[in-house]
Length: 312
Image (cartoon, rainbow, N blue to C red; front, top):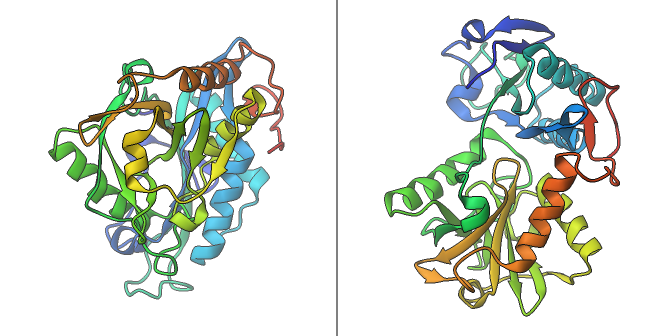
């Protein structure tokens, strides 16, 4: 459910008052950048997971999209923490979005539209379902590919890029699956509609690199650190489609999906058809860190009642 207060351009407004004009450039052309961030309940109160890398990616995305704005990373961090505190969340999903607002139509919207920054929070459970964390999900390889390099900026979390994601996700749901996996322009595995993907075969963890038109996810980066600490080898390489079917384990990562195992792909059972042992190890470590059950050895948590932590 949505929270009562939304931070908009430096002030708080009620949820029902946070409206955008129908002529907003972002509505017509997808000229926005956004982030999905989680705050987890811990014994010391709500804590935002990896706040600084998210705001850094937001600002870098705005630079690439040429969306001018007056905000620094620290200002956005402070606004996010303040929004969580004002809404009284124990845990929540956080959505900051920078976008071109009203002012002019036409593709070249720079200098003729006002940019806006909005931050809203809401309570949101497991993106792929509560049972997905243990039982896994059934997915398909999509008929829609990810964009080719130098067509869209795949490394930017831009609103317009998610038209492609919508096609992948809608097709999967229409066919009775929980999610879709996209291939890149060369036919290699790219990512899910809204998640990065990991493939485990013979104890080695494989994941696509940036060349496969993936978003370099913050949760992906976190999981890679955990995997290294657990002592598993990680290989960054092109992954052929058939390797998905041969895998012992497959799992998704993302702010919304967190760490979600895949139990079947194209109705082919993956491994034992349930969460595998390596995926469970990674999950256990991830959730222990985000919940405060284990010490925050990476400096990943920003506690809402404390000063904003600028560690990556």
